[in-house]
Image (cartoon, rainbow, N blue to C red; front, side):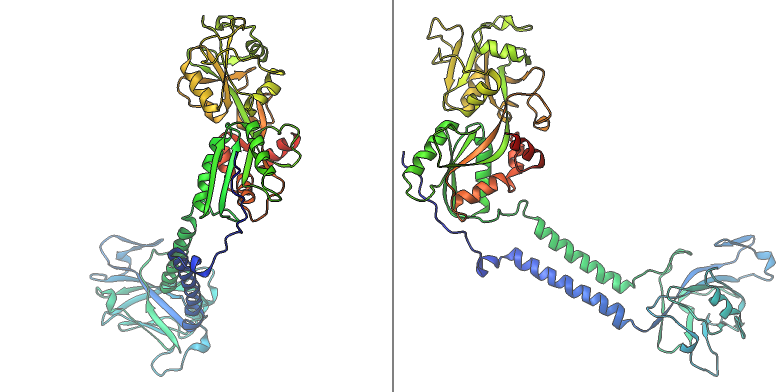
Length: 523
């Protein structure tokens, strides 16, 4: 056998040209935009809006009718007001929604009036009353201080009122006629203070923490973060650390091969320039192939990785082992045999040739037993003999798994080269029983899994169940491969990287998990 080429390719480095992709550029630009927007929010709120702001909003503007009129918690009987024909009630909320407090010293002296003023475009103010929340006692005192709250023609005049941030009071005004909201004007003798009309909200709604402009800026920032997160999350699995180029042959266990094939495909997609060939012919055959490749590779380590169900046989001191996962195996039986559970004693008697017909087992039909086994290179068979039978299987008695070539053999027993061949043959031949790794034995047409002593193979019960048919999956290399080699990189991907998720979906428990560490440590 000609060994695969030696892998001495260094770890690929990422150049500036490799890094400059459309996604990376968009991500960086989005992140910078987010930083600039954040700075803009701070500048807008702390610098551009450092002055005082006084807002007002009309919360009620309704003509009075005969009967009762409800304003918040206050019910007015129109007849108690006097001549109210054509009168209108207006409720105005006046609030400090700026970044600074408003105090007495912020008002200028004026010969006309000092304080705040609301005019109603020629409508006579018939009555006015102020309502102040209970917790704003100082505001209430200022409104009551001389000259106090008063009406003058079409205007309401207020004294100098101190308002801390987010403090407010309300004016309930009775007018002689209807008034449009845009005919209500606000004036003041406050210095450096912006007056603006707010949108009407519910009566008791608090002033928003951020101004509308600040909220809009924050929404832009949030959009930037969402776009950046979308770009980052788009890649489902990050590339494995330390990608390497070259060619690697993975050989050995056919039971573990489905998981390795999927892992190899994912690694090749993540790491350009890597080729991983999965060539599985059994655990023992894989160990021998690795040993042969190592013996002809000189001082280096060949690009070969061997997987074995259980530890390697003796006589290969140069091989270095790594525990990868705990593998579960299961007996599989043709669907024509309606047996779903066998005792350990029944399994042993089947493989000793003492049970030759399924009618010797309760619930079994009159059908000869056919034993479909793996060849001597199989780790699955070696685990079955050691963990379940406690002895070797009987000699091979059939080449086609149907006809008994050895007339003195008690049952038909054949040997096949791979797990896939065993599964196909068991599903095809009525009366056939075989064994396989867990995932391959589930969902197979024509065959079903069999429990041993009432226990099914179950990954979630490993370590807590007495189920006997299980083994640690080992990965072997020729000595210690270079850290920058594809062999080292793929082994790390297999045992510690995102490959753990793939291993679990194939019915194995990764040794690197907390539960796997305990079980693999016990051997």
